[in-house]
Length: 186
Image (tube, rainbow, N blue to C red; front, side, top):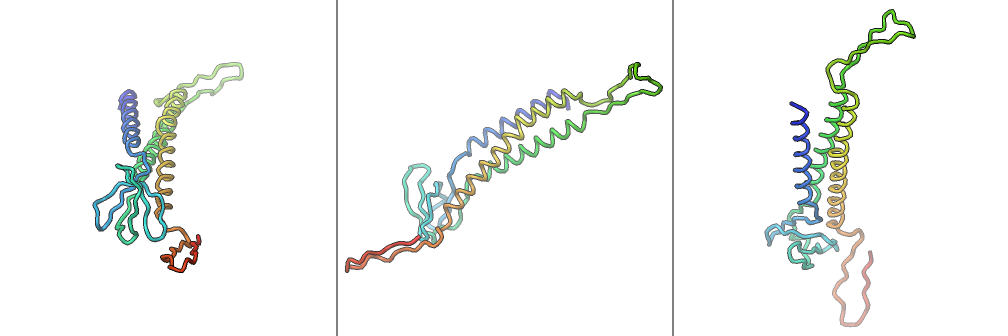
């Protein structure tokens, strides 16, 4: 494969992954319940009884009973996969470029210190071109891939944390008619 075709392939891969990742960069989870179809919403918290969410389409904040939740698809999975592909692909490309630098054979048999030594480079990529291609791989694949991987991990971890019931959360019973104040401990 020629260098120009390889360059075009890498640019296409980078642009395609960037477009896919940009379309999915949200904190919206897909929540499957017994009574509704899959609902796209941002998870605000879980108070131990209900999942408090904000609907992605209307912005309305409402509660979904924990017992009604069947499955939650947390955000960030696509970004982590694309980031991993970019980072690993860029690393493999940089390694392949540097392995293919070629070797240098020098003939210095019988040469004194004042005489020049003739060196011929065998087939491979020249050192300066290899460094430029490695820099290209780092800037266009490894760095963005690592960023996507970290962002996806953050989005997923944050959503999972919010979906879990708060530790030591107790729900206060309905207030009695006697006027006694009830407290909720966290």
